[in-house]
Structure formats: structure tokens, C-alpha cells
Image (tube, rainbow, N blue to C red; front, side):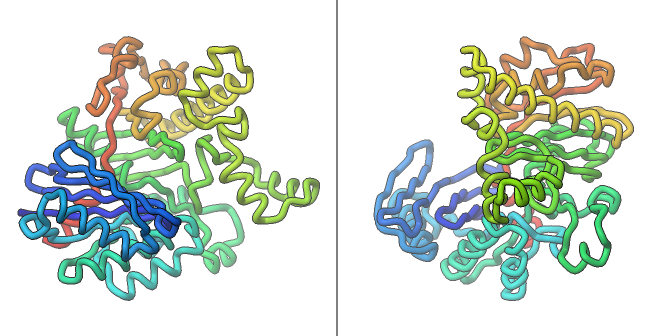
Length: 396
């Protein structure tokens, strides 16, 4: 068997999947969380049955032992389904990593150095990598970077108009994120339509609590909404997205906010939660229906930003064949999809309301009308499978 263990590690938790690449089936999945807390928790799911575990998990090394114990107790057997590689999600690869990379001590050092660009993500990924390499000594470990897919963007798309020497010295440029998802979805859309990826001009909306959009031409990204960090671009659950940079100066001078205050304000207290007090789309829609003007405005601002990027990217692409929606909001909220594309009929975009409302969860669904020149799809993302594919490809 060709089995890949996929690990997505954060500072106090990690998710995992064991995937058989013959048939691309998930043999088991799980979550280990509350690492370092007084009482940790874990969930191990196999054959549709979940097993809960509660015990002290002081660090990631212990967390991996909890995972191994769960495999031993509940299956499948890792002796019979031994991983041939372990694939790790790493958020930021900077300009150093433009493809999946086998992890060495030097790669670990580079991931650590890049933590300055992703302080909330890379340190946690590194903890998971170190624990996993200790637990699985005899197999290759592969880092799959969220930023890697976007490394082929043209210079005019990733360059900020600031002093060139300062930008180079401090590695300031647009990197983009959610690349694993954008790659998976754009390729899945081409396969669904039975058309060569190289022929398609696509826009992919990855809409979750974090959100981004990418223009993909012939399988390669030409622009994306997130930048140096995941703060730029679309309105998100708690993040502002695009804003006038002078606002930061204004807040520092007039509101006497520190750098840390501004960081927390824009990343955790802005976006939908800043506009309406809640970030969950279901709560926002219910509030709008109940007459909450703040919720209505928040959703209008959210959709306005989506339409703006759709129009800009259609122009950059010089045409448009496919628009895909993915991730938690993109896959499950018909109203967001409808409002995001409202008024874009002059681009040849026509959403079928019945298809949009009845898109089957967990399956690729066409939600555009038969007359629409642009195909609009709902495409469930599977970042873990994409990580497994890339890990398998470079170790076999």
C-alpha cells in the first residue's frame, strides 16, 4: 500500500489524516487539541466511528503518542498500513519554497526563520514537524506550503510599490495563501468539466473564516488577494482585508494605539465581527432577516468586495471560463454565492437560483444556468488530499 499520513499542526493542536493513495481513500482521521492545557482532548475517527480521548497532553510529542495509541487501540493498524511518507501543512514558505519539499534539518531552520512572516502559524507547524520526525524516524517528511502555489505569479502582481531596497531587505512582497486549496479546486474544476486545465481561465473563491480569491490562467496563478500576510484582500470573519494604510498611522496618532493594539484590532476585531459583532454567516443572515442594519451592511460590504475582485480578475485574465466557490462559506452559503456574482451578467455570468440553493453538500455542483457563458461551480476543497498527493509525488 502507498499510505500518506497528513499532519496540519498549530500551536496547541493538530489534525491528521491517514490516506491510502490507491483510490485516495481516508483510512482514519483525527484531532488532538488543547495541547499544554490542564486537560487535553483527542478524537480519532475510523470507519465513520469517532473515539474520544481526554488526558493531559503537555506537548506535541505527547500528542503524537496519543495519536499512535489511538491507532493501536481503534485501528487501522499502522503496522499493516505503515505510512510511506508524512506530509505537513506549512503556512508560509516565503520566496524560498516554491514546491513541496522534503524536510531536512536545514528546511526546519528555514521554516523557523520564516516565522517572522507568519508568527501565528509557522511555529506551531514546526512543533508538529519535530514531533512527527521523532515519531516516524524511517520515512520521509514533506512540507507543503500554502504560499508555494502562488510563487509563479508575475512580478507585477506580487510587487508592492515601496522602496525597492527596503522591500528586499525585509522580504516585503505579496506571497498569497490558501494555495493548496486553490490548486486543488482549480484542478478539480477542470477534471469535472472534462477540459484541459491549460485551456481554462478561472477564478477561485476560498471563503471560510479566512478568505481569499485567486485568478488562475491555464493552471497557474496570475494574481491573488492575500499579500505579505493573510490580512490583505477580502473581508473575513475577524480580519479587515484591504484598507487604506494611512488608517494605521491615523490610529497610532489619534487613538494612541500601539503596534500590537493595531495588529489585534485588524486581525481579531475587524471584518464581519467588527461591523456586526458576529462572524458566523448563519448568525449574520439571521440577524439581517430580523432587521439588524449592522448585519445587513456587513453582508453588503462582504459581497461588494467579492464582486470587485471578480471583476478585476476577469479583466486580468482577459476572459473567464470558470468561477468556483469553496471552503466553509463558499460551499455552504447560497446567499453569499448569489450576492457575490450579482450584476456580473455582462461578463456572461448567470447563476441558476434553484441549482444554487440545492447544491449537494460534499459534491461538485454546477450552479450556473445552461445559458451562462461562464460556468459557476461549488467545489468542495480537500487540502489534506492535495498535501498527500504532493507528498506522494516527490517521495515515489
